[in-house]
Image 1 (cartoon, rainbow, N blue to C red):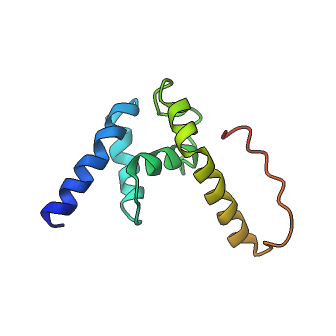
Image 2 (cartoon, rainbow, N blue to C red; image 1 turned 60 degrees about the horizontal axis):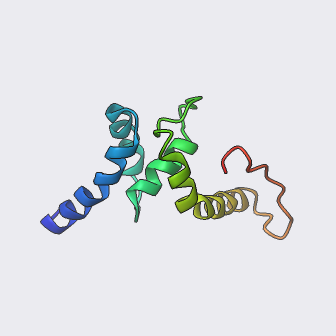
Image 3 (cartoon, rainbow, N blue to C red; image 1 turned 180 degrees about the vertical axis):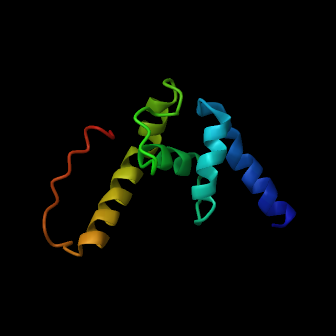
Length: 104
């Protein structure tokens, strides 16, 4: 990466560093996130926390940050989850009845 990309990544890291409960967790999820293109690292960490492949029963985002991130990213997360569901099932013309009360 060139200097501008490193600077962008550094700025992107500043917020997630403040809202995760464990720095080791942040570095753990970065191994998943950095495999893909992302435009907002805070969202990517939030998404990874919700969709954790290890199925951690408890969020590793600080309690005071969860409502902030839900307000900021709730609609985007819902939209992306619907898109994933539709792409997996290839039945986009059927109504989907998803209980999103756990996530939102």
